[in-house]
Length: 420
Image (cartoon, rainbow, N blue to C red; front, side, top):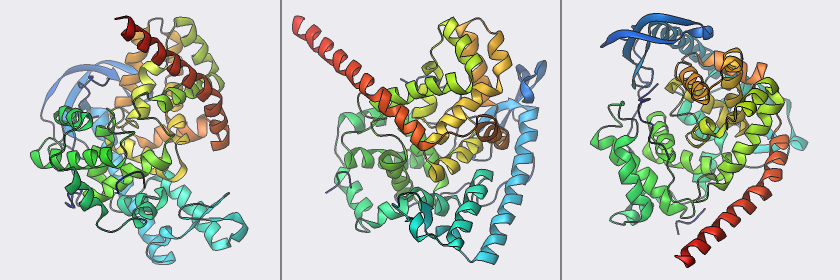
C-alpha cells in the first residue's frame, strides 16, 4: 500500500504529526543580540579579509544559533527588511490578480503535473508564469512558502493522488518497526542541527523521526541516507504541517532531483558530481584547470552540497532562497549555485596551492553567504544559462560509466568475500 506511489558548522560527521510550526509568524525586528564575543578571523563580504574583527553568536532568521561576525549581523538585518519589502510585492499582486493566483496552471514544453502544454497557451497563463518565475528568484515570503512550494513543486498534486488518511496510516504502520534505516535515523537525530532549539527538543526530534521513517517505508529502495535528515529538518521548519513536510520530501526525491541520488550505491550522486566537474571546466575553466593541476577533486566539497541541498553549508535563509528556485525550476539550480560559490572566490582559488586551503576557502565563503541576492546574482547572471536538456544529456553520458564502475566494484567486493 505504501510503495512508490550558519548553523552548527562543527558537525563534520557527514559520511508536526500535523503540528503547526512556523518561525516566521512574527520575525524579530531588532538586531540579533550578541551572547558571545571573541577575536576571530574570517573573510568579509566581497572576499576581503580583516585580521581582527569581532565574532558573535546570534539567532538567524530561522531560529538557528550561529556564529558569525558583525558584518553578518548587519547583512541579516538588511535581508530581513528586503523580505518585508518582497512580501508587500506579493500581497499587492494578490490584491490585483486575486488570492492564490500563483496556484493556477503553469506553462510547460511537454505538459505534466500542475502544468499545461504550450499548444493550449493563454496570454494570462504566460504572464503569470513569467511573473512567478521572476518573483520566486527574488524570494518567496516566508508566510507563503508552504503554499507556493506545495504548488510549484508538484507536491500538492502528488498528495491528491492518495487517500487523505495516507500519511496517518503510513505512520501507524511504521510504529514499533525496526529496520536498518530506522536504526540509522535514530543515530542521526541528535546530530541534526542541535543548534536549533526546536529541532534539538524531544518534540522536534520525534516529528523529524516520523517524517524520515515514514518515507523510508514509502520507498524501501531509498530507505534512508545521511543528508536526508538535514533536508527533512529544514522542510519541517518551513512547512506548516508535518504531513506537508513529508510530501515535500517525497516530491524532491521522486520528481525534482535526479533518481538514485540516495540509494545504497549513491549512483545518482556520483553522476551529478561528474556532471558538475564538466560544468566547472566549461563555466570556470581557469579554476578547473588550476584545481586539476593540484589534484583537487571537487566532490570533496560538492558531494555534501548536493546530498544536503546546501542545508548544512549555507545560512538558513540563503538555503531557503535556493530552494525557492529549486522547487520551481528543477535540479539544474544546484549546479548554478555550486558553480557560483567557486566563481565568487576565483581570484583566491587561483592563488591557493594546497588542497586543504581550497576546502577552507569554499566552506568559509559558503557559511558566511548571508546575502542571498549576492549568491543568486552570481548563480544566474555570472554563470550564464544552462538548459535542463543539456544537463540531462551530460547525465546520460556519465551514467553508463558510473554504473559500470559500481558493478565492477560490487563484483570485486563479492570476490574478496568469497576468498575470505
